[in-house]
Amino acid sequence: MASEVSREEAERLCLRASAAIAAVLERDACSLEAMPAHASPRRYVRARVEDEQLVVMLLPAAGEVASEAGASPVGRTAEEPFIEVAAFLERVGVRVPHVHGVHEESRAIVLEDAGDTDFDRWATAGKGTDLDAAYSWGVGELLSFMRRTSSVVPPGVISGRAFTGDLLRWELDHYLEWRVEQELGVAPDPGWRSAFAEACDALVESLLTIPRTVIHRDFQSHNLMVLADREPPELVVIDFQDAMLGPLPYDAVAFLRDSYVPLPEALFEAQLDRWCREVAATPLAQGWNEAQLHRAFHLQTVQRKLKDAGRFVFIDRMRGNPGFLRWIPDSLRAVDSALSATGDPFELRPLLAHVDPGFRRS
View 1 (cartoon, rainbow, N blue to C red):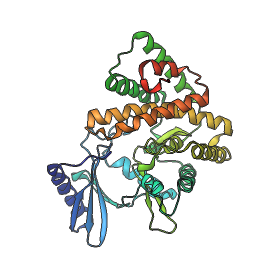
View 2: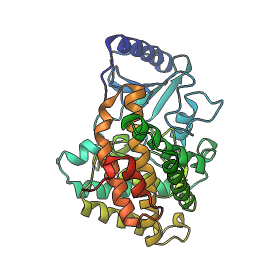
View 3: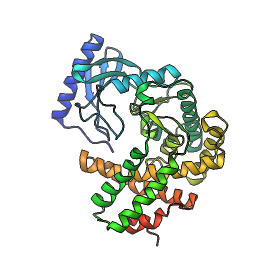
View 4: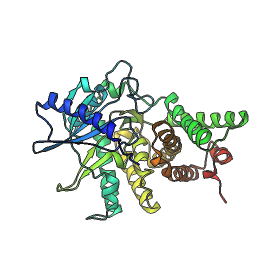
């Protein structure tokens, strides 16, 4: 999924990183290596400074900052949301890369290096653990993240951003625009569009009734780094700058219905049951019981994974990275499973099957 960086771009990135390190640490880097680009417009350079390994995060120019709709408050510098969210997470005990400092001129943040082992690689490597044990630990870390981030009032950079109805609908429209119209080349007729809009509006209305909490917004395996050489291993959360208030199961959907790691159904069901049971026993649930949380999880899955299917096409067409397209079938299967689990209350499946072969059953 990562795309290689050209030599010219690598040189530009390394120059920016070198300037940032010199300004922040008042030392020179011994070595610099531009890291492959992923879905984000942010770029990263790995640096060695004396005996310490660091990562320099290079932010895009103003106007290109937001990685998602609703992510960046107007009038903020590119660095501010990341720094403020990092400080909040560190304060409540969530393990994040330590911030060494910011160099505004280079639009750069100098960070602790959390390594190359993400949760996907660690959980599926079969070294010292198995998938069931890995996901049991991972869900425990997610529950800890939820408890810690709800233990105090979040800063304005988080509390001032929320999944509104408009934002939830924008994500659903992402599927229509990029998966249906751009990738499949389908131009739905007005009748279909009206019926789809009505079904999406009903889905969003249901999602807006779910209790809210602080969400990472993309709590999936590639944003969770594992320091496997520690005893016990440490989970380091990255890519958290878009944190906001959102539906209670949003991060659980990102983790358990991760397009990059399709889970065996028995493992998925066991960990979903555990998540619902443990959340229902906390104030976060606001009185919602396990059955209600199960249903909320599946409804959120429909919305989130349709958005992902569109987002992967967007990343291909707009950022020149086709590596995410192979995960579209898994995203669609997650939607189909969630529709079955909820009884498809908004009659979305026939509408989706009309335009998307991924929903047509033989």
